[in-house]
Image (cartoon, rainbow, N blue to C red; front, side, top):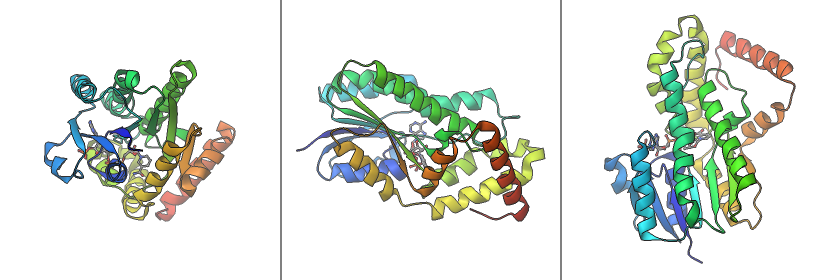
Length: 273
Ligand SMILES: NC(=O)c1ccc[n+]([C@@H]2O[C@H](COP(=O)([O-])OP(=O)(O)OC[C@H]3O[C@@H](n4cnc5c(N)ncnc54)[C@H](OP(=O)(O)O)[C@@H]3O)[C@@H](O)[C@H]2O)c1
């Protein structure tokens, strides 16, 4: 049966792959922020403008969707960015931007579309960073954890029949990695005492952008969760995400020692993972 989807971040990486997949047999409202990329969306989708940094565009997006349908099957919150750098130096404005894009915009759009989602699903693209084990991308990990916690609270509270699912991919080969290097250059340059670590992180990001898992793995997991009558609240994608989940259960002190030792070893050897 044909279903109706709303997908944000449809113009790149995971969101683009999800849009292409679900548009084959369904109606898809596809969110974009860059007008120039609309022509790259698959034929038949219904594009809508949304800029996570501008709440008025989220309201307009929800109103546009509501003007076209009174029922949605699945909302997939995908759009995201990475704020990286040393916590010692990162500006609070940058932390706010991270939460605006990765958390508040998703909550805002979801709240406005909840009336259309009775018997439907909300699928959030979280991250293995939500397990909170990665240095120098603290804001990103915190935003994904906050996303998971707030949507889980919504799941616990809500009286409507809406299933909320968190997808936590490990490293996936998408443009996100290169964007994260370019968008954080200024923050990186202020980390004078952490240059060795930043150099390692950048090299690692470049490698993940190429050697990460294909987006198809995320599509597979999202499609499985979307089709399930009783989906799990959380799915990891990739071995690295499974390991991250497993070790996150260690006592914090032991975990911190392990991560610091690994970082020291990696920055000394200057190798990529
Ligand atoms: N790649 C990974 O390894 C990985 C792993 C775990 C989780 N994730 C998560 O997966 C999601 C998709 O990431 P991706 O890897 O596919 O990266 P991507 O290719 O960079 O896609 C990110 C999407 O979000 C959109 N976006 C960014 N900032 C926005 C804003 N202010 N307003 C509206 N849209 C905005 C981008 O628009 P443009 O097309 O205009 O740039 C793009 O379509 C993100 O939430 C990310 O955190 C990725």
